[in-house]
Amino acid sequence: MPRLLRALAGLAGFFLVWEVIVQAGLVRKEFLPPPSVVLVTIVEQFGETQFVRDLIATFLAWAIALLIAVAIAVPAGLLLGSIPGLRTATAVVIEFLRPIPAVALIPLVLLLIGGGPEAKITLAVYASLWPIMFNTIYALGEIDPVLLETAKACGTSKFRTLTSVALPHTAPFVFTGVRLSANIALIAVVSTEFLAGAKLGIGNFIMQASTGSTRFDLVLAGTVVVGALGFLINGGLEMIGRRAFRWSTVDREAVS
Amino acid sequence: MSRSGVRRARGAVGVALSALMLATLGACGALGGEDTSKASGGEGGLEKAKIKVALLPVVDLAPLRLAQEGGYFKAEGLEVEAVDAPSGQQAMTKMIGGEVDIAFSTYMPFFVAKSKGAADIRLVADSVSASPKSNAVVTVPTSSVKTINDLAGKKIAITDKNTASHLLTVSVMKDHGVDTSKVQWVPMALPNIAAALSSGQVDAGYLPEPFLTQASKVVGATPVVDISTGATQDFPLAGFGALGSFVDKNPKTLAAFQRALGKAVRDAADRSKIEPLIVKYARVDAETASLLTLPTFGSTLDARRLQRVPDLLLQTGVIGAKLDAAPMLAPQAG
Image (cartoon, rainbow over all chains, first blue to last red; front, side):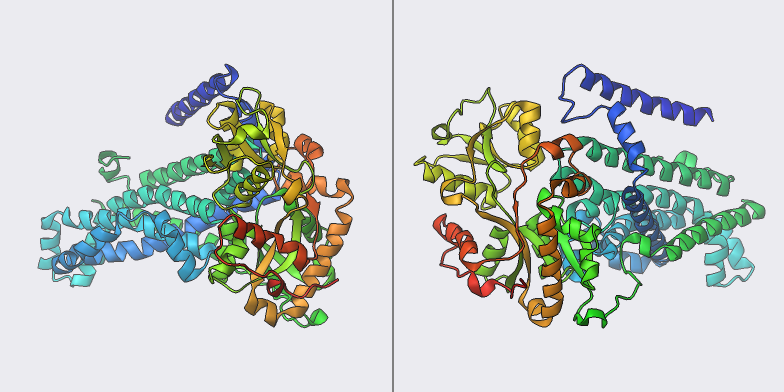
């Protein structure tokens, strides 16, 4: 996998620059521990059940949120994409809601549904809905009209056309939306854990390490692990996408 | 587009989705949410055998952690579930919002909320008071602040306006006849104050442990004045609060909570028992944990002693009218 190796070389370079900056004394080691310290801390933390449970909680919240977002955004996108009137009617509401950052809704969500895992899942769903929905709408507009005409000529029902013609065609676009949303959902989950406090979660771990103590290596360890999780999620989804939609050129065309 | 391609695509997406679904279903408990294990309600006659408490990652909570890890709560038939909060104010918000039953905070937000009529706050247990050398206003060798008299008109780092760090600093300055009117208060997170001192961003800062020990080790911070002197000697710093409705409905649960905490506070006199808990929960490195000065741990509240907090709030103008601490105290179990 030369591509993966190249990607990792870039990461190693980043860590090297960080190490050099700290070792050269540009920043105090106590305030910004070098990667040589942070990576050891990460390894240590993987031996702690609490840390592993935090990681699992964050991952699960992410997975559930993404699943729900897909379940809502794909049908909504199909509906809005195939009924132009509906799309016009909802455009203003959607354009009003879309720019609201999920973290700005934390106080409201805490008030309405409490601060359990529901809060972070709700906010992550909210944040990750849009790319999936818009990619679905966009994909529907891009379907080759010949395919639709052919289906019509064969007397295929509207529903059947949607599921057998439109859906497979839009799938690669939708999947790209999912991949974009995957990282957005992770950001929303970790931010909520960090800003609101939770029972479990990496964001909670970082918050605890940054508010209560003097161990910045723990703060950075949590941060690096979140970054690694995002990298793995994106890489994993990219791989699934390449396998599943081998015929499609969307992923190569789209901004990845 | 080939049919086999479409079928393969559906298959792969299907597999991915079912994998996610399985992960979801299999591990709701791992999310840290709904605990399906039923708390043994009747045992011990507690009204509520499982309570949620909002906590902070601070040294002050070492006795509570001891009660948790040592099974002191369990011995009372009580299960205590910890919910982390970024600050005492947030912990209290979680309690008012009904997410937790009991919240840990410094006393100031509790009294301010009560005074403003924001919530019917009751205080259920004490946690810590200022002990000598556990809280101080510090400076660094490069700062122009050498003695407490130099603090007038300087930049002083505090956690926030009207918090313990702000008001206690004002109080000790007034004790020494230092003018507080021209001080520039710089709100800052505790872990950042040492760096701000060494870079000259602030001239002095209020630090509690373990930041005090850490700052002296890393940037050579030295105390200008110990907070536990004069009007703020042994000042009540932090404790546990609950809503009046919870206190009225759960007297036995609360008594069990207080008894377990009381036992933990007595055992906390043995420093070797709580140092590992400070390393684990306050996330302090082991060396700092062994060096830091512990605050005075307590569990039983005394109205007369606690009255000092609303009195200080009144004196510094944070609250407008005299507030009586006694009616806010929940019944104390030995």
